[in-house]
Every structure is written in C-alpha cells, then in structure tokens.
Length: 77
Image 1: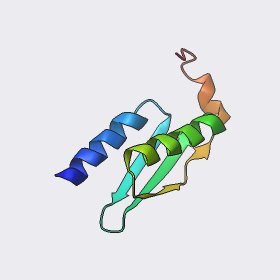
Image 2: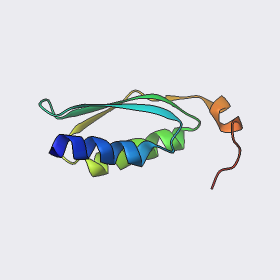
Image 3: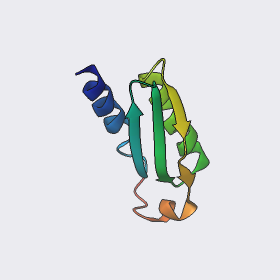
Image 4: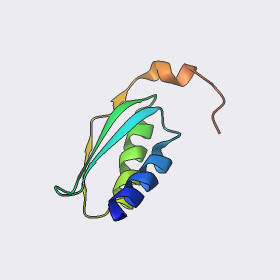
C-alpha cells in the first residue's frame, strides 16, 4: 500500500508540469521520469520535488525540455 501512496503523491506533485510520466520501481528504489516540460527550470524543479517526496530513491530524470510547450495555454500562475 505504501508504494501506491508514494505513486499517488508523486503523480499529484507533477500533474501541473507539462507532459510527464512516472515509473516507480520500489524493489530497486528507482523512480524514472520521462516526458516533456517547457523550461530547464521546470525540469530541475520536477526532479527536486520528486526527490524530496521519495527520500532514499534514485531519481532518473529523462524529461526533455521543449520550449514550444510554453506557448500552449499561456495562463501561468
């Protein structure tokens, strides 16, 4: 159940960050992030957020930066 709670927490934390997928391997203690975000800053913040929620896990950040995503829905808060 803890693994499901961790996955839900991670999913909620990254929901507003572009098109990002999360893969969690609890037995290997690895979290892999894939997808696209509009800025390098968001890529770094995403990794930091996930790392903070999943202490003891290795975070593999394969998220690509695609500035074109920033033009979609320019309502940033």
